[in-house]
Image (cartoon, rainbow, N blue to C red):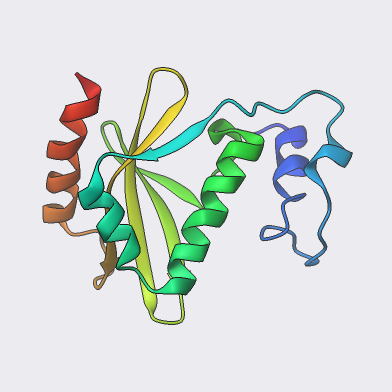
Length: 142
């Protein structure tokens, strides 16, 4: 269960604001925010997968990454990220052309490593996409 402070912080983000207001997250918190999370891709294959996404979904991906870097991954939840299985999580992007996902793992040093990006065509995340992401994640989780 989240405390009220975390809810207040999440609502300060422009995309999450129910009123559509752009309120600085730094105006709400008296304590310094964790800015030590970094987001990276596993390799050039993942870079190409992200580049193949429609521009509005890439923009959403960048916005989620900025949100994680600004407030810390532990303070970002639904609808932006969701746990899938084991060490695997997903960033959830929606655009005019449909829905896409960027699957990632977290590793020591507060690093988010994106291991797979794709356009989602079915209601559930396909098992083959999860399996591929888990195989790729083994490279960074060793």
